[in-house]
Length: 183
Image (tube, rainbow, N blue to C red; front, side):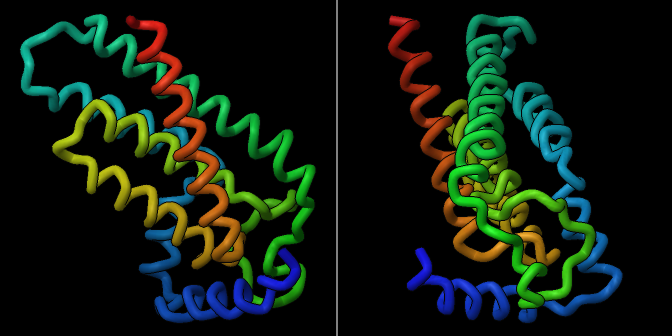
């Protein structure tokens, strides 16, 4: 990974600087990051997705219970994997430690992988498996959350990419396990 560090720094700096740093974008990207509470954003999106279903079914249908269970389990497993396993294995300092970018309210723990990116892609994966019509909206939201972490100076580009891969993979495996158990 150390051989990729210069490239990661260049991409991170570019992405951090391409969007103007002003009050509007600071507020937008701070909102998207929700200061560590991204589950609030995704639960809101989950509720909206359930309410937007065209089928006339109750909120507590088997499909919705399966959907909500897969969502909660994948979100929980992703968070545990990131914060208690991967961050402690890689122990990568955040970009502001090396003064690559100026941070806007970043956590003090390790950088790789991005917990926000992994949670966002975990949520987008589960949501899109149940609501294929709006798949692009969920993944666009996940990309924007991931970009917000780079904009705010809290993560490198590869932290966000690694987090996205972790979140997608854990959700995909959770969905496969759930569909296997349903048969």
